Length: 139
Image 1: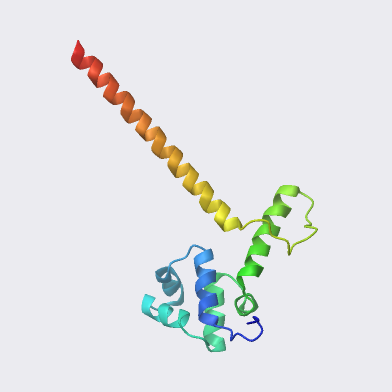
Image 2: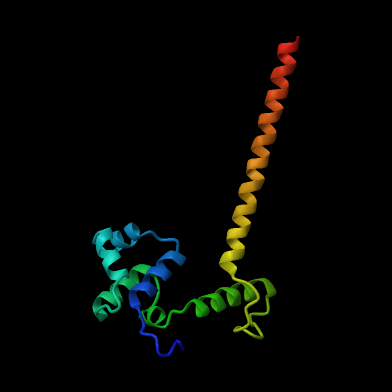
């Protein structure tokens, strides 16, 4: 089925943008002067009135058009383009639609690697303490 035939579910788009901005429903609710349940209802709605959409967009720090036109593919291209432009220093990505990896997946892999490294360091320190305690008891 092509994406042109799928109905646009504005609530899912709002939810995904909120998640990408690392914002909880409670934080969005507070920004809108409402409660978490109201945000849940919005995110489960296929449509939303234009005034409410403007408020949500402002609270998320994006334009109404950004919400309406949001797709995962656009976001991945945007993130790759942003990081490619930042690191290359040329301000231009020759092929912004070409994506060799998902930036969010890479970031999560790095977080996981750092967590594993931290756990190994903590275990190493525990082993040192245990060894020193054995030495002290032996005297």
